Length: 171
Image (cartoon, rainbow, N blue to C red; front, side, top):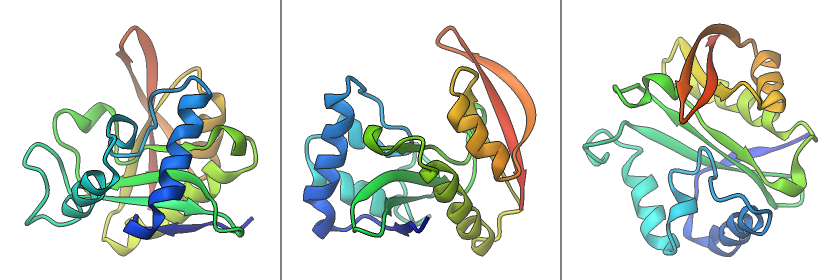
């Protein structure tokens, strides 16, 4: 399986909005790892925000330096989105260095594992030596993607009445 991680660009607008709409059509209103693509109606504003957040000089003061990527398949379709948070602030200590989502129609095909594997290379290139990822205990496919990429259970926490686990991946 081949996927490419690509930073969002203006030319991705129609595919990005279609990707977002697929979640909404499936009754899902949260797109993990999307840096709030699920909460904006203005692609250009979202693009400006994710671009600003890639640099310590322009990152939102309430956030951390973050790289966001669309995952494209061989047919140039967006099959997922993933982000890499270079550091963790107090808010993120329970949410980890990365969030990701795969389009509902593309799940159970190995895309999450491939996206995470590619992101580990990006993290290494940025001098990171480990990633922490959180996952709801009920999200078995995501747990499999994390453990397939070397994730080891570290600890648990409660969020909105649900138990979630933190996994560590050494780089």
